[in-house]
Image (cartoon, one colour):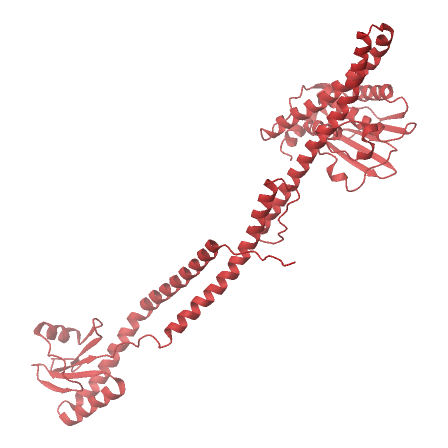
Length: 468
């Protein structure tokens, strides 16, 4: 099976290539401008001083025409400099090329007598030097410097090499960008088409790696959320089916006129209605907490705060557990005098009830559940410990996720839709506290709640608003 290599997008490659060429052109232009400004002044002064030196040497032969002509011819042959010498009145003394340079005009003579050396780089580089160096102008020399060397004969080859190197580096650079971008695009399309397992698989330490990692994390969260929603529908359907079926049977008996059996079913109907009410209440409470904490940053659920005696909360939670879970033993231990809490008693009691219910659900009948409450330096600590099956380490990070159920194999027996721990944690955090779990498979689970006392509750709740 052949592996399809990712194709480099033409637009991306062309854009990178053009950027590379633009960079080369800008570098060349900047270098030429800098060289021009850095060298133009010194180079011009060098030519002026050199020309003045040579002219002062040639001026010694201006009364020896043959010697002067021979000297200028050698200059033309060796240095390729065209030289013409005139007297101040325009008479030609000597020249190494034909036709010689024209005599200077009166204005040019005045300028030369004033400046002694006149450099005219345009259109051809001409330097005019007065003879002698100081004093009245007796003669002058006109030097025409050779043009600068043109481009090398292999300039085309050099340009081709530069363009080729730029193309190679552009392809490498474009591939390093295009491959992860294509993987990211393919993963996004596949995920949008319903393939929830689609991931980028990109592992890099640059910004592209961070984008790919963020996409994979988002896909993982969305996948878990979608699966949780499906599990919610399945669990709620299962939880609703059984009590509704029993209620329908009781109503059918009542319609048939069997009053005795109908009255005997009233207790079952009341229990089924309580289960339905608790299920609907859990779902609505979760929705309320999500809306309150998700829409407005820093918002908290609409708590009905009042001063609550922690001892009273513990007593009511213990009484409810003993009534609902008579097959379990409950040990209650209170260390010291429990503080007052600034809390919503209904929601806070539900949080403790949920922890006790979980302890009863996931431990065998006849086992012991322990409820410990103690005063701390900052407030209150409540522990609920059981002797149940425990929780696998792989499930621990997901326990506070709504609708997650670690004990799927015992779903029919334990019931619930996986909202108990999520609700308890959100309620505790809304009160400025924390909820942690410790568990060992086959040993049991301990849930620990910490809550601030009444004097610190407001400050802790404000801090909790800024927690993720």
